[in-house]
Length: 293
Image (cartoon, rainbow, N blue to C red):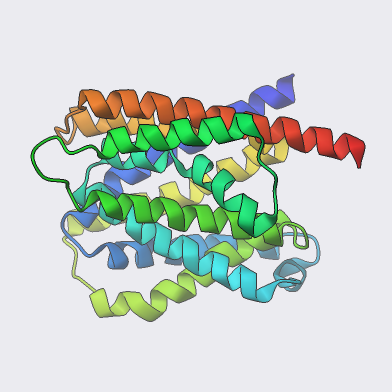
């Protein structure tokens, strides 16, 4: 019990720090190109993954050994793109509404897992997927006479991250989590270094302080998340990730003056409920398959 309690503490710490990181990223992306902000953040994250890998059994060489190099590179690129998209969404759409749409990611993963991973989905998960998509439509519903096209960027981000998770599941069949984590940081850092310098901007001394804090939060949040997954199953951690929506709503309203519409609140509740059920059902089906295999 003590070990599980520690796992939940690590997960809550990770999610809280992630939310602070998102809030600071929104501030920076409002003044500087998101690609530039992401590049600096990945430099710190990439260095962290290299140091961590060097301390693993077998060192850097053993950690970097992979049976799926193409997929590992694809994962790293997709996540780097995801960070840029998410930060852009925070700046253009707002923290609360972006996170509300991002909450649909587990539903999209279940939807994409059928054709890509060959997973079977029963009527219960189909119902949850349908309910979740309905919730997203409520969140996207125009509040005035015109639909805000910028919201489609958050939908694109959602699909991008869903593909990243699907590919992560594929490589997990052959590579360890430490190997995947290593490629996440290194490939992302290389990818952003190839693009980011074209968007270089000179920051004010105060904003360099915020940038340093983003780097620290990026490293610490990932570290705590690794510790959480070392102790808890993914099915136990995933429902807690919806706290990000609560944090984003509080920060968005109190600090950035964002407003929460009725449709957004109702849609978010539907999406979160459908997502939690989808994750729980996948866990139940997975355990059943393990017992019969």
